[in-house]
Length: 209
Image (cartoon, rainbow, N blue to C red):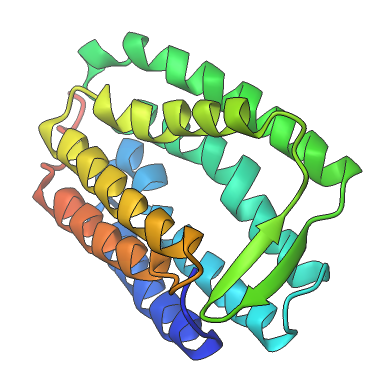
């Protein structure tokens, strides 16, 4: 989320460009591709929110698309992608965050299918409402699946990336909660660049004999 439609559009284009570079760098490591493609997803997410701004919030298709990406898709995508990219010895420990991600994504998908998600412009922020029955539990599951998988990845770069995501999310959430300004897009941009650098430092997979 950004503080205006223009900021969302510019940030989305920049983040997507980082995603293209990340995917190109990961081409010789197929297991890294899902994680390398994450900035592409985040960039598309920002561009969708620019449409939400343009329509002054509401409950239209753009709002629903934003929620589908932000909620069930990322809850499942991140732990699955980390499991693919993690060192072999750490993969068994990542099955738990993946299972939590599956459960969380299922609950969120059901909520989106049975409830109406709405967006409201609040100054320099956008507030989204879905009316989840157990929001605290859902948020806990979401964080355990996404940030938890990064911190348990067994890869030093991904662990540091998880710490950066945690710090950026905490700052962005604090500012957004006060309805002062939304800086999620800035955090997503920084994280996307860091992730692209991580992908670039990875060695290509050794060819099979």
